[in-house]
Image (cartoon, rainbow, N blue to C red; front, side, top):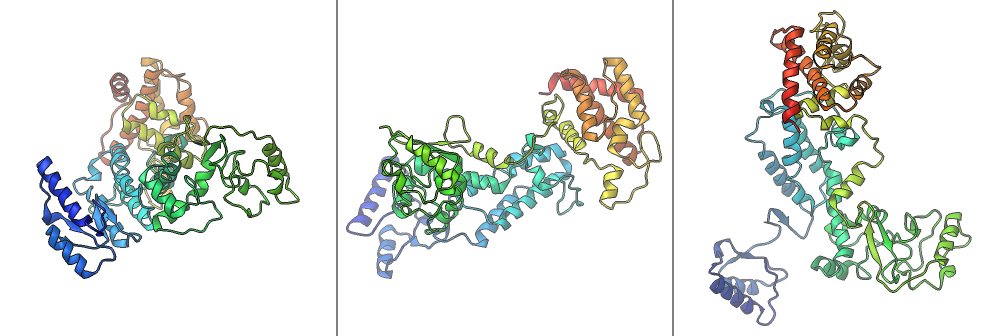
Length: 491
């Protein structure tokens, strides 16, 4: 893409440059795929340029490198074209023929990464995020045009949480979109001589390298307006290390406490919003409203003690140890804010196949499709434990911890490999966590216990759907054989 004016000999010079490029490189320009986009030109000028370059003209919007090139916000058709492209990636895949663990990996590594290129430039509307989430959600839970609706075992918001917070680690598109767009604001400071920074400062900023403060109006292009919606998080995520104070706004930059002075309670709108720390160094007392709040009083004392140096001010990113912006650190800060730590996240490190890890995750959350869970979804099935034939309503707690059949399997494993007794302890999560805690980090026994829980679930399903029954001895031998293989080859 080449930008040019038509003043003077600009058009002829561009034609000569393209001709010389072809002679030197041996590459010829395909004029059938070439077009120019005129801005504010008369028809006579357009016709002249078409004749000189032997190519046609077009107008915005158009597609460039896979993105809509437009001076206005992309319309619904542009977004729908992007959604259809994402949906087409599933044309050759049948989610019903892939294990659920495989579907989670595919959704995380393919369906969640395709939108990154688009989201690094455009703020996705809510309806687009919902449409993409539906594609990912339906694929994970096994729902397609020719398939029955799969059960959604856990809420989608929980699916998008990190594994350390009790989720599956599928990216949250809205948060990821925010993290990607924040890079543009960071580049205003980190790369002030880049073409983007020079253009943005020329159009929107009152001083080089500044972000319009909260008091400024949202003026400019749709892209700039979308960026300014993120400026609050940007300002609380950055901290200025003072040098000479010439590039730091007194009121709006975060240089003295955990937040800018303007965010403190009872702070009025500054009379001089663009005042720098250096310009105000010897005039602190005239800057604050009277009477001062307690926070402002404490802050004023800090200002009186501020000593400026000769080095340039430096902006650092709070969420990284090195102080430089990264999308990963920003996403982590946003997605984990206010979230509790998941106590059983170590299950993702067990030396078993991903299918068993995912099974343990659903077991810990008590989201397996037992009779109890099916009844909660208004799916009526006759009660009874498939393993011990007890007439009670099947629950995860009974199936894995109270069932006599399961207890005999654990007993045989204890005699064969010294597996400690597996006994119930309150909720399903507590029972699972205590059973693994008793192994004291023994990797082989951890693998055996994880394999035994999964094998009992498979035995339960085989009895219900296939009518196949195996004895406790056969199951215990199978678990030991599989456990040794998993312990040796799984990472």
